[in-house]
Length: 85
Image (cartoon, rainbow, N blue to C red; front, side, top):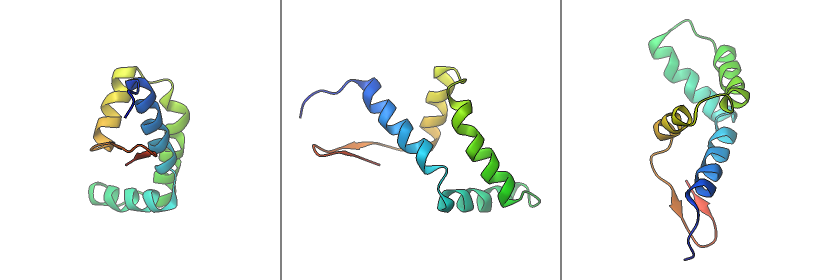
């Protein structure tokens, strides 16, 4: 396997995370988890917050981006054909 720059891998992982957090399944799962802490939170509020994260991402400091990515991604497997999560 050839060597890949860490920045390239990180960018691919973050792009996948940014795409995944806006899927209906993740929005509903996040809403259900959030209701444990705040029973009054609505699915619409969670959807709006997750959709607002994408434009906000670029404004975050790299250390904060790394911290959030670390909380969301347990590991990254790299295969010769593609990245898998």
